[in-house]
Image (cartoon, rainbow, N blue to C red; front, side):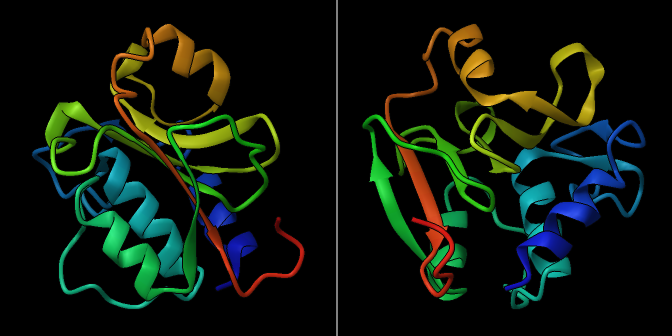
Length: 152
C-alpha cells in the first residue's frame, strides 16, 4: 500500500466535495461519506477492490484483507501517518453511529464529514473526538499497515 498516494488523493478532494451517505460516497458525483472516502484513498494507494464501498462496519474486514492489523482497541494510542481510525462499536457502527478517517501525522486526520458542510477535510483528531463528546466511542479501533516498518 502506498499510503502517501492514498493521502494525496484525499487531499485533492479537500474543499471539493459534499458529505452524503446517500450519494456515490466515493466522490464520483462530488459526494463522500467517511468510509467511502477512506476506501477511495486506500484504493488510490493500491488497495484491493472490495466489490462494494465498505461501511464503518465492513471497513474492518477490508483493512485486514489489505495488510492492516489492529493496533489499538478502545485505549489510548499514538497515532501516526497512515493509521485508519474507526469510531463506533463494531456491530453497531453503521450509518451515523460510526465514523472513520486516515491519519496524516500524529495529530491530524483526513475525514469526510457533515460537520459545517465540510465534506473532505483535515482536522485535529483529538479535537473532533472531544467535540463529539466521545459518544461515538463506545469503541475505537486503530489499524496500521503491518507491512510498513516505519509505522509502530
